Image (cartoon, rainbow, N blue to C red; front, side, top):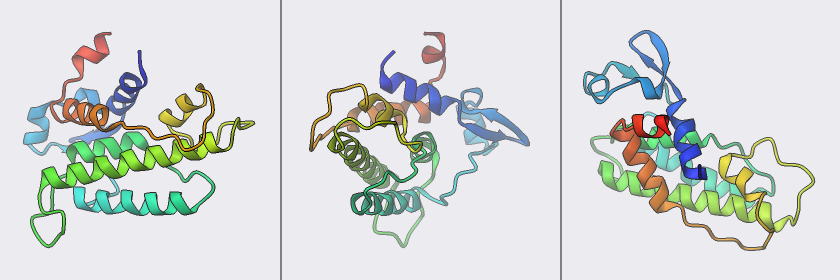
Length: 171
């Protein structure tokens, strides 16, 4: 199982409220979402708010020598299920906001992995390391690493939006 499959599985374990009950994401259906029977309990009010937060985290990460906390699963669930604000934002629709979030997240992961690799071989993994960073420790350490995860993140987000949980859970 590759890193993206593991990341998708971690996202399906993200706990949401279905009615009054807290359940893992894989237990919800598209009908639950359409009926607005699911509360994702996310810290952002809209996908535009998430895009701004990701941009701010990216700016902080570039300035900060230490890794800042990043809940990758929560961010991917947010990108998948947060709705767009109706007006008054620069990122005016759902698709543009989703693309902005994915691009910011791609840059953020690349920056974080470059920071890890720039320190040569670290003595211990930082507590704030997310799944991608844990995998990065297994590769030879190089400076200025550039990764592109856009296509894979887009696939994960589409599968989450479509509630396509069964095929991955059976593997």
